[in-house]
Amino acid sequence: MDIDKIPADQPVLIAGPTASGKSELALRIAEHSGGVIVNADASQVYDCWRVVTARPSADDESRAAHVLYGHLSYDTLYSAGHWLRDVTPLLKGKTRPIIVGGTGLYFLTLTEGMADIPATPSEVRAEADTLSLETLAADLDPETRARIDMQNRARVQRAWEVLRATGRPLAEWQDDTPPPLLPAKDCTALVVEAERDWLEARIRRRFAMMIAQGALEEARAMQDRYDPALPSCKAIGVPELMAHLSGALTLEQAEERASVATRQYAKRQRTWFRARMKSWQRVSPQA
Image (cartoon, rainbow, N blue to C red; front, side, top):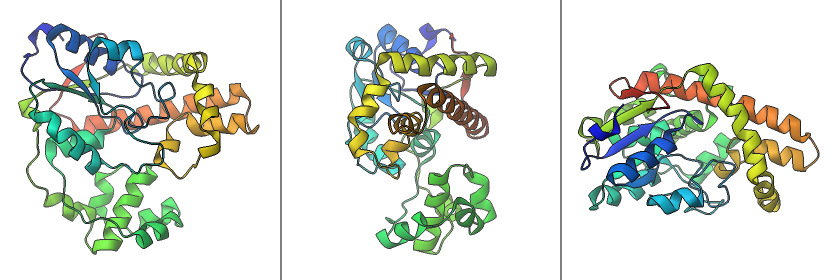
């Protein structure tokens, strides 16, 4: 697309699979016509990972304002609801937001609204932590199952916890959702669509680049605090690098496993974006 045609006073939303170049597009738009770049990626909110999660570099951050990147400690629990509360004041500022990331649920809460679901009691979460993905999934109703990524344990567990804690399926709560803060129709809403072979080749190259840029050093600095149950420690590449540091994997094996996991994640993202963002404008990585 021609970025000259994007209204300078209109919010911009840029979703896309990992490694698709969406952050570069956001930076081009910000430099061309102004705006603050707002993170919509669940892994990039943590301060312990810059290289591993491909957060914007210090050089990128010097070229345009960036917010909600690396603003949380590694042990902070952070949900789409937390993100929505953090992003709300940014929608009222004088500088238009350019919201970019790969976490579809963040965009969904922003553009379609978010149900006011009560907090999950700690004992319910503790029970859910002991159950397998298959057990959690089996308890969900068909409507909820149709709406979430059933291979994503966090999403399935969240739906199970809502059902157990409230007695109502997640789908029912979603159907009672209040109006959205920022409907997609009021924005320039873009989805970066990358050709599969191009994206997979880029993913393979990217992890090797991360190693060269210090990803292993990041993991080593977090080794004594690593907890695979924490959301921050589930970022792709982190378990693989920790396995290498513990001696369970060679660096080459860690690279390969991380690349495979990233490709699988990108595939799920593309499927989700096609299903949930049908009205958004498709752009190529070179747009």
